[in-house]
Image 1 (cartoon, one colour):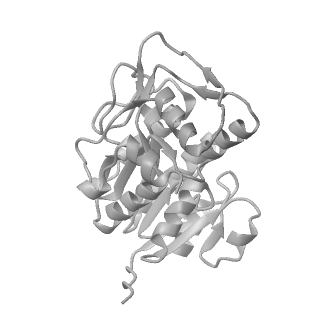
Image 2 (cartoon, rainbow, N blue to C red):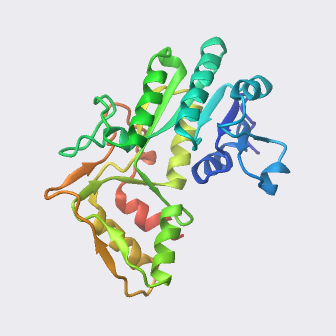
Length: 277
């Protein structure tokens, strides 16, 4: 017998993007799920569950009042100033309604720290514009009541149709060099497991900060070379990029908010079980 849908209503901002759309596909059978798209995309225009939303042009508050979501999942991209303003309005809505905000953040909130991996309760500090944007929005969420905010920090996301894998395949086919960073130590995740983890967090009404990456680390060069070996019979050329003389960490490891064992992964899982299935 098919599982009955939850009464929770979910709005995914950025549901036409790669990660946002994967989340939509994971959740729509179980929740009253809506999404937004930005460009003229016929598939989304014809889907009654999708709304047009451009972060630079559209008033997010009007959309929130139409959908009245219990969960807002923010996977939007675009102009940084517009993103900040949109999240200010989302937080105003969450504050005055019975709703939660789940924000997809990034390992880059720690990119100023290079000597060790980072955990959920570590202080954020970034040297990049992108990392500082994520920190600014995170800090807005941290001022909400604890039961209203979920911060998801992501490492690099892989999977068969992810932009990163498509780029590597294109480079291989064109006999162009694949860029690797020999001194970068990082962790990873894959899209299928990520969407399952988010489903669990929502279903079990979890809140707080989550690091949804592999529980172990790997050098970027080793990881990419193993991926390339799995893709097919190519004679790859690598461009080795050194940004430091020593190992540099960019990893978000789970410690305080660990998920159940069946939702934990290793970097090898990303390569072996889902990347090329």
